Length: 381
Image 1 (spheres, helix red, strand yellow):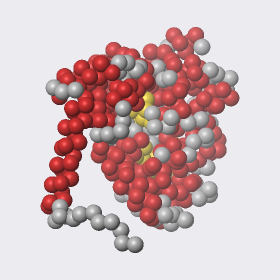
Image 2 (spheres, helix red, strand yellow):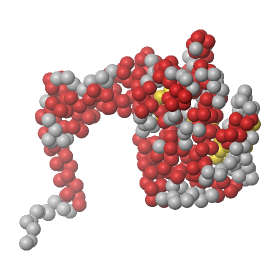
Image 3 (cartoon, helix red, strand yellow):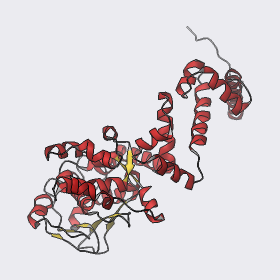
Image 4 (cartoon, one colour):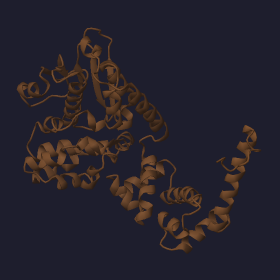
């Protein structure tokens, strides 16, 4: 452990602008599915390893949470070294499958063919992580390739992450094509100290290193295979959801901070240090990245509170004390002062103004639709 600790800085990216941009790229915590039991089976301390890279272990309980991709990449390399387990990522891949992709997995499983599933995964992989590029290259019709790249040019060590990505892709294809799926070959940019037999055990194919890309080499019939029992309606519904989600909620630092503010306000623990910890970042790092985008944390909190306040005030039966609590205020008077600052009126008057505005809007809609003259009549018995 001492040797690994002494070299810990080797696993992190340095401080150039390009590296800072790499650090800002996020990935779903589902990418670490199976990490804790795997480390335990190897005699290691998973929580200590996670915290080495500022990843709070509790984050792994929620697959919707995110961490910096650079931290995940460094964690895998560091864990392999500390545990002296060169095939760490391959073992982790054996504990994962397509389902780590969440809604994307549902789309893939309900596509008409394997080829369609892979193309759609390629189009929306940024929802899982904008730092992972997936591409189905069919320029050679006889040897189509599913290529995987990490958009982290400055991370020095990536073998474990590449092997994890290829391993999960292979297991995903076994879910889509069938358990008898075998790639024609596995290509990797990296070198490896592992014997060929170790890759054969997972992929059932030869692996080639020092290649121009990281890829699974497929056969045309792999892409043509129909997916059994697919539900086209479910596929289209989830596709619409992903379209809306990716348009409305890009996985950038700004969006993630806003989401965490909304989730943490009712706990009264909505502070920069707490949010930085939830994002596996140092407080100063998060503050610097917000400043680089012209954002101030306190202003973001104020904006979210103001937005949510109108939403809650629109609920006529919601008590003011409850609204104050949901917005993270310890005292009703604090909410009162904030509302006066925002709108120049007390919350009760703001609620009345919102109600009047909503009623005027509804009346306007009725007039335009020709329904304003309709009157309620008692039912005929």
